[in-house]
Length: 379
Image (cartoon, rainbow, N blue to C red; front, side, top):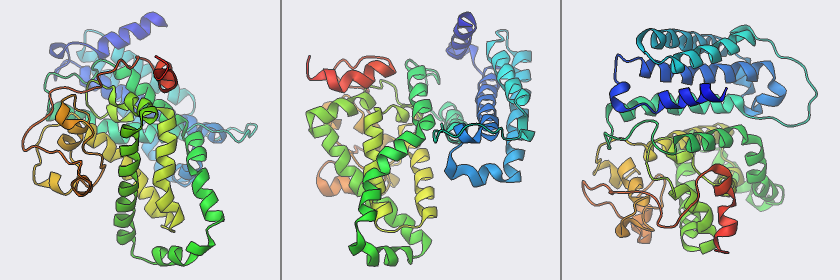
């Protein structure tokens, strides 16, 4: 098993000349992505008590979703076979084929749920698969077609570490949501004085609620983000996110577990406390996942004019810059004019940072970085 994994990693990290169009590398990569997504979907359908997210239950129950699962597995099979035909190294195609086969053996699109003891615990396999498809299929090709750093590989250094972050944040969605929404639930239970505000907000047109949700959460997140840069103990958590030395769509997922919980809790407060419609909240959460991948992505384009109104990749890349002029700048996630208003805006026309990361030695590995904020002060 170890040798198989080593061959797979070696194939994923193959040099650029061995992964061009016609080599079978891209078909193998997308086959692997679809295979894991298909397997996750099937597992969530088979064991919904443990592996399905309750909020996605209506989606999983629809007949259209079964068609999506079938198409996902068929796409994985087709691309895996193409990779096996084109590529001398067979690790990518063969792994994708075996993972897709596992999804089929578990029942495929016709899988039926299996009863099991309900412990009140679930892992978001379906949530992980949706994230993987939405971001991977969207940004992985974009970074190959129009990269800012053309020599940066899709599977650059630390890619496996960031993929693990992506997996953990998706699979532990229940724990994160429970911890994050605790303060919001308390305020709702003891906030009778806001009942009039909730009624007014819930009566606004949907699009007005959505724009207001973006503004309120960005304003809240701006100051949350800025505090994590200014307070040394909190910086230890945020330094994990900034320790990524390469910027791409996957780097946005590198966040300390404690920061994820606190961030979700803080940004959910305006939405839950002021009575926004559930559909508005769900749409905004979906936007955040895609938007976060976009602003970290390795895509070219200066977008000087658009960047005056909305956060674009170059704007956020300066937030991650090693250069002194970019440090403690550009805290906004959606609206850069918040940085202009509060004096932290830096967006030089047509210029990109030369390097990313932090000057301090943040350790590598998920569990070492999980401990880092607590041992950092003791060094």
